Image (cartoon, rainbow, N blue to C red; front, side):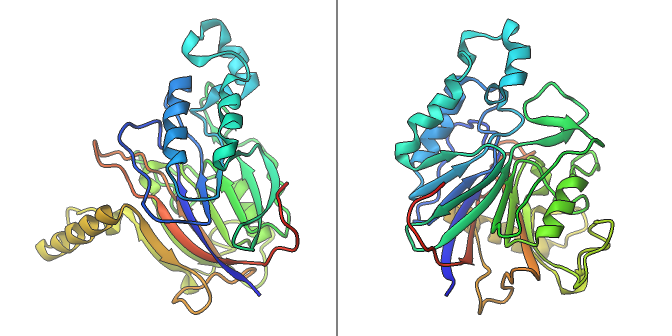
Length: 318
């Protein structure tokens, strides 16, 4: 029997002062990277203080491109110019080791498995790597080059810093698509329950994607996704006034956003019996949880997502 499991998902906090975690218990918290803005030790400490306030027994975190001191080869290139604020090799990673007693588990790229306190089993694939034309940040590969995302078929959740689907939840302010085709192809093949990420601030939102019965030879969101049976959960466009909105539209959006900010999160239920359930192999929920906003002093909301996971057999994690 599957077990209802509640996730709190956030990304791109960038050590922003004044951020607070939602005041509700969850089974698992996930941070999809960019703890810092300049990868300095005091910035890591700020984000870890935020993570410690989250009421969750397990807090899974990965790095982002701004967290380059966690990427040893990249840090080595920058070390000659580095200031004492960056620490030495391994200092930033040690901060996460010190926070392990508070439930914080830092994941490098690869598969990881956990048995949760609620009795569920969680299989995760994590990757901090993002494609970029600028190779001066951490955990990056050149756009257009192949990067291997080896996602096992039994994975429940993929956690990446960057977005997978070149075509949705990845549109930047400059009208460019930031998604990664190699990552999307791996996710399309695995057809897992949830893929959470950040990196593209303007792409905040969530969408339940339905897969076509037969995978295509060349994966893309056009060929692999059944858009007619997919369902949009939320986007920034549904929360922020736009130039063609009526006065009533604007009033409704402002009222809804005020209520969501008062709660401190955007909640969505995808368990069996809900309006849009996640069905392994048939649907996948994609969630961009970037907290950083392009609007000054307007932090975006973390996601609270209810999913069902298989029951665990043994206790512990690996």
